[in-house]
Image (cartoon, rainbow, N blue to C red; front, side, top):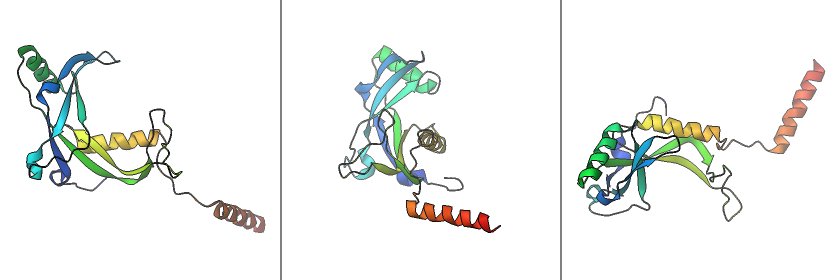
Length: 171
């Protein structure tokens, strides 16, 4: 991702909040208050076709999205409609990684392998930095040790070990 410029306007799908979907205020485990909204794909960009496969939900915390948080608060109090813009962007990762379940274990496929991915899907607001969000996701993959490492065949590893032993004996 470093030194690469991505024109987000070419890879972003735009979304609008569903007016009646704003819920809150709710309290998170850390004591912070938040509102939650559901988003639907803006079909105007795609000739009126809807291609969204799942619902996107975004939380607006009082400290990180204070402006939207206050707007949600006001809309709920007054009973007025509120529209919020969001965007989905898919960014390729430098290498493949395993998809993990809630317990941090690799998710198996029916054919015996494990589910893999080579890109990260982010759902962002206009004020969020895609590069920072991407870096945070990559750090999470690193923390979970989910990157797929190039596996060296056991025979090759044994051969390398033998070569190292004979080289040290000759000295």
